[in-house]
Length: 162
Image (cartoon, rainbow, N blue to C red; front, side, top):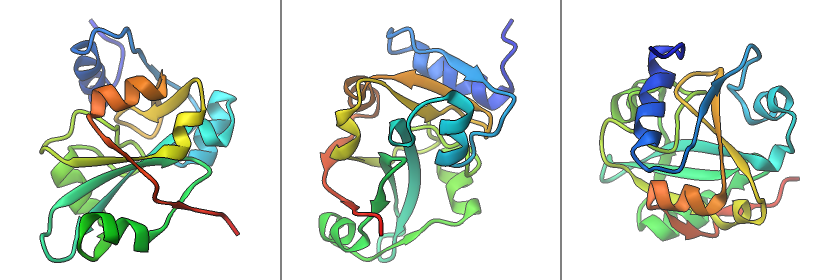
């Protein structure tokens, strides 16, 4: 019997299907934001794989963006890639399409099939951390494993922090 909370356990079940020995851990400190996650884990901010959900303005379809904790999304680049204007999805849209709450959205195991784009900057790290279903759960993986489990396309959509 798992000691993980239901949402974290759901992510672990999905991860187990890949056969990569990826393990969800629940922390006492919050991992809701990239900064909180890096502090709770004790890793660099850039090693946090932020999973953000956007919505196409015309299509109303979700798109999952995975970007380094150091990165900011260049919405113009993202719109060019998608071929339509986008907006950041609200909490209800995120929950409907992923099955998770903002601050705990994992890169896999979503309620609906979601197109996934991975910003290439995150590939520079040998190990990264992603949310695992709750604002206190994470799992560790390599960038190669992230690409494999999400089937995400690698793109350049980050902009420099100011």
